[in-house]
Image (cartoon, rainbow, N blue to C red; front, side, top):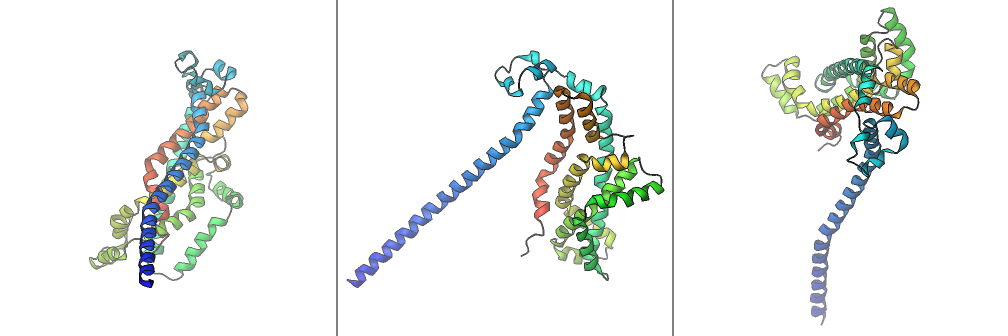
Amino acid sequence: MTQTAAAGSLRSADKAMATDTVLAPKGRRNGVLAVRIVVLLLCLLWLVPTVGLLVSSFRSEEAVDSSGWWTVFSSPLDFSQWTLQNYSEVLGENEMGTAFVNSLVVAVPATIIPIMMAAFAAYAFTFMRFKGRDTLFVIMVGLLVVPLQVAFVPLLQLLGDFGLVGTFPAVWLAHTGFGMPLAIYILRNYMASLPRSIIESAEVDGASHFRTFWSLIMPMSVPALAAFAIFQFLWVWNDLLVALIFLQTDKPVVTSQLRNLIGELGQQWHLLTAGAFISITVPLIVFFALQRFFVRGLTAGSVKG
């Protein structure tokens, strides 16, 4: 009797385990599906303002003033409301084209310079031995919590003494200084996750630090370099305060020119939306071109083992 009960209990346990095995994957699939649905809905909500901006930028002034942008979906074949005049007027008469070029001149060097300098520094902090290395790295990372506003006055005075205020090198140096701590932190963490056996093999072969850095570390650090490049480019491109202080109004960038359009054009939304969409095209291109490296570059070195 006892053996029969025990056998029955074992069979019941086996059935329960089999049921759990069958149900667990289904539950996980349902969870994954729910997460994907939520993410899709969030993406759609984030896209709504961008779609409205794009649609309004191609509509005529009369259409923008008379109806909302969503009404185009009720009559998508009504081409009388579409025009390219908004972009032509913004780029030509309102000097957005010149500001666009100035933003590129500011953003590209202000992204490349800190990346190169931070890569050298991160290599030194990771693979070179020198006195006070860890202390210096902690101080460098500690600069991340310092607001950039506290450096405006001394940096402005320093650059003014060299006659650089109002020139592109001034804003390049400012963005380089403000972006270096985060760049060193990201790149150093990534380089620390690289296999040291490769570095040791290079040392055995007689390679110098410079050769090891350019031939091995830089190609292997592309994900981290791309991740920081996205951050830095977006910050510089969307910056208004640093450009106004160090570049001033002699060479307006996209953000400062867009601010001027808001003040000058008032309620002319067809022109404002065209100017706004011009300002976001380059960041979108940069992000989608480098996004495959983004997560990998940020998470590398966060988990060991």
